[in-house]
Length: 529
Ligand code: NAP
Image (cartoon, rainbow, N blue to C red):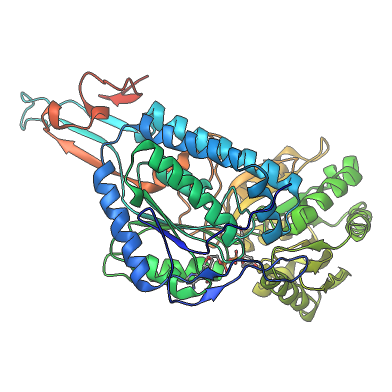
C-alpha cells in the first residue's frame, strides 16, 4: 500500500488552498503517540469570513439548481472517494487507529449515504409540496391559492465527528444532506483527523470543478481551538450548523447560535447512554446469548459509538446475578483497545474513575487506561434508587464501559428509565414468558425519552435508510424533531415557504400546476403520487 505525503495542511476557501498565520497543529498517531506530517494551519477570523462570503455567493448562484444536478455532484463525490483507495484508508488509519476493515465498511456506508441522499434530491418529493387551490367565489371571502414547499437555507457549517471520520466526517451525513438539500457547506475539520478531512475536501473540490459549479460551494477550515468553530457559528452569513460530538461542545455551539442577533438552528447530536432493558423472561430464556451480544455491543469499536449501550437495566430475579457475572466474564476476556485520541481516553478515565466514588456503586470490572490511548472494558452496578438520586451516574462514559442498574421491581425499573430520559436509543429484551403488559409499559417508558426503540437486539449498527431516526430529546440532541441519519436528514437544512396567488411562471417547478418534475404532492388534501 502507498502512503501519501502530499497533504498541504491548508484550508480550502473559495476553491483555493490557503495558508494562515493562525498557528499550526499536527495530528497524532494514537498507536505510536507520534505527531504526523504535515502541520495543519489554524483558521483565523478573516478566513472564516472569506469562506462564508464565498459560500453565500455560491448559494446565490446555485439557487434553483435542479435536484438532479445536486445528485450528480453527490454521485461524483462518492465515486472519487472510492477512487482514493488506499490513500484514504492509510491516512485515516494513521490518524484514528480504526482498523482497515472497519474503515472499509465505513467508507461503503459513506458512499451509499451520499448516493442515497442524491437519489432523494433527484426524485424531488422530499420538498414536501402542498397545494391548496384558491376559490375566488368562496363566501364570505375569496380563498387564496396557497402552495408550500421546502427551500434551501444557505451556508451550513458542519463540525465533523472524531469517532466516524468518514460517515460523520467531511463528506459524511451532515455534508451530504446539506448539499442534497441545495446548500453550500463549510466543514470545520476535526483536529483528530485533519489529513483525512483534507483528502475529502480535495475530492469535493474536484467534483465541484468537474460540474462547473461555484468553488465556494464547499470549504474546509482546519483548527484545534474553540475560536475558529465559534467564529463559524457566530458569522452572520451562516444559516445552520450540523454537529456530532460532546455535550459540552454541542451545547456551547448551540448557546452561541442562540445568542446571535439572528439566532440559527444547531443540529447537534451529542452523548447518549442508550438504556437497554433485559426483562426476567428474556434472562431466563436466553441470558447467555444476551450477555454475548451485549458484551460485543458495549466494547465494539472500543465503545466509541454514540449508540453504545452504556446503561443496562434488569429487575431482580433468579437469573440476574448469573447474567451480570456472565457479562462480566465476557467483557473481562476482551483485550485493551486503542482509543481515537488521548483526550477521549482521558475523558473515559475521568468518568469511569468517578463512578466508584458514589456510595453504593459496585465495581465488577475496573477499566485500565494505559499507554497513550489504550483502554480495557469496565462494568459497574448500582441499585435503582442510587441511580435515580445521583445524576453523575448518568454521564456518558465514552468508551467500553456500562453501568448495570439492578431494580427491585417494575416500578424501580420504570423510574430509572424516566430518570435517564433524553437518549438516542432505548432497547428492550423480552421473552415469551414476560407479561405483554409489562413489555408494553417498559417500551412506552423508553419511547418517551428516546429517538429509536430496538426490540430484542442491540442499538449499535445503525442502518442508513429512509425510515431511520437518529436523534432524540435533549441532551441526546439539540433538535429532537429531526434525524441526522436517513433521508429525512435533508429537511434540517431547508425551511418551508408558502407562495400565495403566485403566477405559475414565477413558482418553483415543484409547485407549478403541471407538476413538471413529476413529484409526489398533496393537492387539495389528496396525496398525488
Ligand atoms: P468535541 O470535543 O465535542 O469536538 C467536536 C468538534 O467540535 C471539534 O471540531 C471541536 O473543535 C469543536 N468544538 C468543541 N467544543 C467547541 C466549542 N466550545 N467551541 C467551538 N468548537 C468546539 O468532541 P470530540 O473531540 O469528538 O470528542 C470528545 C468527547 O465527545 C468524547 O470523549 C465523547 O465523550 C464525546 N463524543 C460523543 C460522540 C457521540 O456521538 N455521542 C461522538 C464523538 C465524541 P476543537 O477541538 O478545535 O475545539
